[in-house]
Amino acid sequence: MLFGEIKTRRPIRWGMVGGGRGAQVGYSHRSAALRDNSFQLLAGAFDIDPEAGKAFGQTLLVSPERCYADYQTLFAEEAKRADGIEAVTIATPNNTHYAITRAALLAGLHVICEKPLCFTVAEAKELRDLAAQQNRLICVTYGYAGHQMIRQARAMIAQGDLGEIRIVQMSFAHGFHSEPVELANPSTRWRVNPEVAGPSYVLGDLGTHPLYLSEVMLPQLQIKKLLCSRQSFVKSRAPLEDNAFVMMEYDTGAMASMWISAVNAGSMHQQKVRVVGSKASLEWWDEHPNQLRYEIQGEPARVIERGMGYLYPEAQVDDRVGGGHPEGYFEAWSNLYYRFAMAIEAMDNGNPDLIDELCIPTAEAGYEGVRWVENCVRSADQGGVWVDYQ
Picture (cartoon, rainbow, N blue to C red):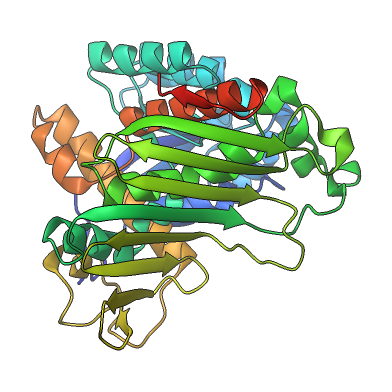
């Protein structure tokens, strides 16, 4: 169980690009990073408007002289300081992620980036290779992966509790954009603009979340080919999709399907991952994240609860309060951020093997998310046909 002790020798000196007032996820990053004293927020370029960013940064107790006008100045000036930042979080629109991540790596910084990491596989490979050359870490904030029951599912599958894996069924299908809400909401408007959002809307914005969760649960499965069909039910969003269906075949012969949607009217989230084996199935639903449904053929279904002594050790390590008390979104992000801090320290100390044990989304996860979207778009644009996974 976690009791709030710092997991590193000292807090990581940390800055932010974006995440200012009105940003959708800025507070989530700060809440997660600061909860366990894993990071210390010292600098930032919080807003495209320099004055607004400076004013906002001061409300976070960042010194005025370390609230910078842009990321270029942030990186250059902090590099001159003996107490300069060591890591930076990038919480900006999608089309800026590649350039800012690249600049941060070249400045010798570890990077925590919102997804998608970039727009193309070529860019993702370049960033992954650059991070390795610079001996820096890229982490991607697939925040749902911080929920304890994801680690429980991974351990159960690895132990053979489900038997041979046959089927993976995924969804992330909310209804909040069933109307053209972007007409009145700037934070949504850029998500349906190809120049800013990239080659997809819901595939990249939503679908990569359950995809990554399935990769955590099932690291042994590799996609062999897929088929994608995507639609723009709100016509003004074309060519970007607000609904998509994906079928996948793994190298083992197991099959997967995913429904991704922003127009599932009435639905809150509907993010689910169901894994079906030869002996049993399990299902995780992000609206009930403290529970894992476990169904053994021929037996009554059972619900596995977070925080209980019968869980595998991998799941118990991230407990923050005892069983029966609900944990949720902020705890999941915090679990990722303290692991990010431990991974950064391990990298700096020449101990990269520890990073694999921490089970965090790194540059490889960012690369795979971009790769998956690129293959989905390629299939959909050919009329929804099976394509070999490239």
